Figure 1 (tube, rainbow, N blue to C red):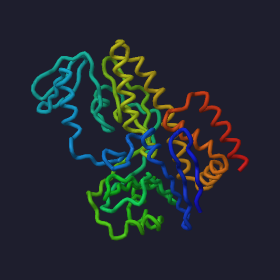
Figure 2 (tube, rainbow, N blue to C red; figure 1 turned 30 degrees about the vertical axis):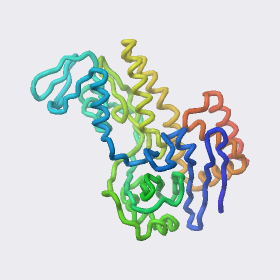
Figure 3 (cartoon, rainbow, N blue to C red; figure 1 turned 90 degrees about the horizontal axis):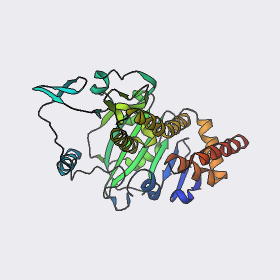
Figure 4 (tube, helix red, strand yellow; figure 1 turned 60 degrees about the vertical axis):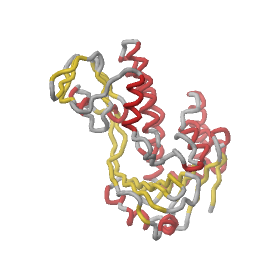
Length: 326
């Protein structure tokens, strides 16, 4: 059966559908994607989830660096850090700031003694691209008994499929699609258009993200579960906050901003992970939002960061009451 939710001012219509196998899907409209997750996928050019091979990110960064007078060195890797300098393969380099933007396995984090973790959860994910014409303009999230599988149209003839689960063996495509017969049928006979790739995902909060003149940003500074779709946007927001703190010569300002920026996506990630673990909780939440579509609009506004703190509290209280009475 179809259960439709009007997302109102948050952009477009999102809806879920339960199939006979118990699998459940969440649809986000292209307007929702535009507002919350990046450009619209309509036209499938540079849309959300698009594999754009026209300009590698490294070349874009190099071009912008030259425009602002910065220099990028790729021939002399960093081997370690000291108080005000980098240890390179061929000597040292004096610097005022050291920024670790080197990913989830950050060496800068290790070198600076910032590896103490306040909270960590880990899951597994596997990704494939299929050469098949997209059947919808929406991003779909399929809820299986042990997995969440999301589908993103990336071109007129290709879709990206990502399977996420608590256990690595549950992210095997044959097993995951076995619980999602409708999706399995849509992909039947479709050729793979990329190499299958796997990764460890999860949420990680560090006790500190700066020390002295060293600061961490992006996945190096912790992260949120991939199901939130918040990774890149959170990194960009952190980078802006870090630039402000550097200009003010106060990395304590960045510490405060980093915690504030992570609060909402971490909370939403925890909620969505609970939906994945507890079918009864997900079903009741869906029924509550079906009965009062404005709750869905408010929750979506919270998720994309477009709701002020007062609205977040009010929406949580109202949704809790509707949830208990459904």
